[in-house]
Amino acid sequence: MEIVAVPVLSDNYAWLVHDDASGATVAIDPGEAQPLIDAAAARGWTITAIWNTHWHADHVGGNAALKAATGARITGPEAERAKIADMDDGVGEGAMLFVGDHQAQVWAVPGHTAGHVAFHFADDGVIFTGDTLFAMGCGRLFEGAAAEMFCNMARYADLPADTRVYCGHEYTLSNARYAAQAEPDNAAILERLAAVQAMRERGEATVPTTIGAERATNPFLRAETVGELARHRSAKDAF
Image (cartoon, rainbow, N blue to C red; front, side, top):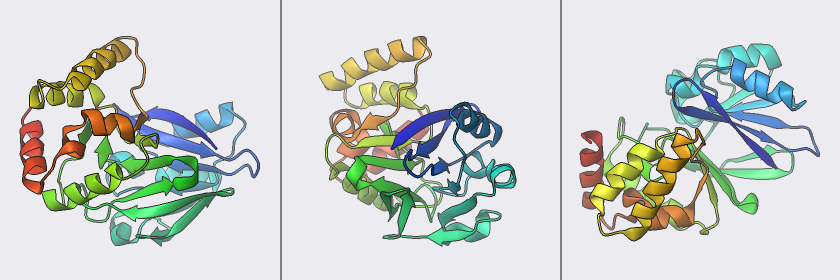
């Protein structure tokens, strides 16, 4: 399974997930269509499906044009069907999706939006978390509560340390700066902040990350109580 980051809009990442054996290529969270069409064409791939983690425009804005260009079906959270135009297939907790023979289990991870989902390829050690778990951060609580996000973080933290996390935004530098303030004595955070600063100065992407790295440096994943996560979220919102 090959995964390609496609920068869209100002700081979003959409993803192409490709299985060479079958030729299947899934576009995940296409905030725009043309960058994904171009990225697929450059590799000789044909987009065969569109998956959305949640309804926000920066994740679904390219759906219609991408569907028109490719004929791909749109899959997204059933709980958000009314907010995702032209969605074909709705999914929820426990549903199984495929890219060729690669199987993804759908996780319900509410909090950022009420129906947000993630896509976990357990056998491939990969998870697409949309706007829930970020590198060194978590999503804002637009439609949910801290308790929901705390449960999400605990669930993510239980994954194997080498699980690769593909999230929806290049927020890592801001998150790292907040983390360094939140945990000033955490040497791993300070080391990662320096590395992230250097990567961004070179114009490099800081994602994917890994669950192991997040366990060591993400204050939201490391929060031991709902209250602690809520305090971090409020502080980061104002940071």
